[in-house]
Length: 73
Image (tube, rainbow, N blue to C red):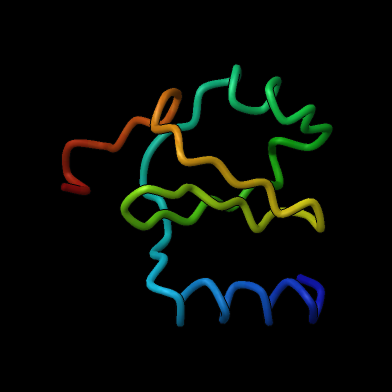
């Protein structure tokens, strides 16, 4: 992982984000035009989903396409 990515992840954690433990539907990646969804690392806090998988740092406030695993609740 690049040094900048580590700084961004630290920023997300300090801002109240936690690692998203669930599945992300393919249409989310299509919406963002993601070329490498296998690199996605999603973080979540109430009202926001943030990807730290590449330098685009995609973010959405829509929960559509994000599904938590039942044991993550």
